[in-house]
Length: 350
View 1 (cartoon, one colour):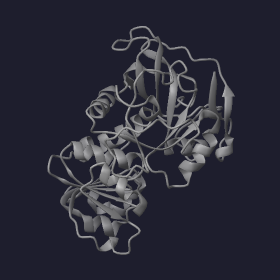
View 2 (view 1 turned 90 degrees about the vertical axis):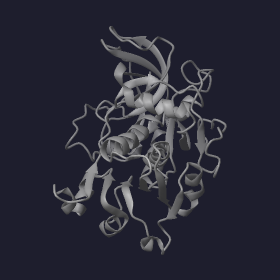
View 3 (view 1 turned 180 degrees about the horizontal axis):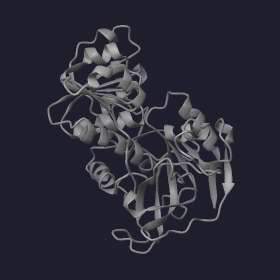
């Protein structure tokens, strides 16, 4: 089978096509014919070697923490899935493996795919969606009617967080650069703010939850925006040191971080929201597997709106798209059309 992986740490050019035998599922695992894989920041950090002090990888390594496809083989004891099911799947960074034509994962890290949209866009749902869901529901413990600010709202986690917070009954303010604001309004944000606007630091707002999806919101603004008793959730654990006093047990405000864990019940919840029309994947660009290095370059330039997706086969090939159904995606240029499905992009299109 073909896979995109790296034999040594380094820049995007280290990500090349490899040939591997298809993996064999053990007990409790499923073999998936991968239709598409999401590109996540963890993938680029692994390839660059930024995490090698914490994660020991056996090289060559095939990255890929999430994707979509079709169940080909069931390991012994697997329940709730059958051969031919269209699924989404989430792996840990150490597991990886989704940048390939076939992947093996524990069955409890897979869920039936949404019945609307495309499997291409569904590939971008698991990591960003689970991260946002666990950040808001489990770490911030948001409740209906609360005011939530999402900083870095146009990225993969940010676009998911805006929609999930809205679905949970919160009043959402989204912060991003100007060109992405119409798209965020279309996702349900009550108010949108341009962080490049010189007036942004003077914004008046006291939020029950501030979700920093990029880990870059400065301490003065966090202090200004977070209400007494409020919660800061950051995707960047070291940034919590900027708010050291918030970590003390007697402080009225809390600073927490989130490290997403793959759980089938959370994947099922994301699919429920997607099938209800409350959660859409914003797809920035779709690449064929052979252009994985270009996808990593795009990811690292810091201006991705939504998700990048790698497709492993041609449209209509077994386990790719066919008539399996899909998740209604949003093209980032379709401002204000949040609930309208768009045509599936071609493998190399934007």
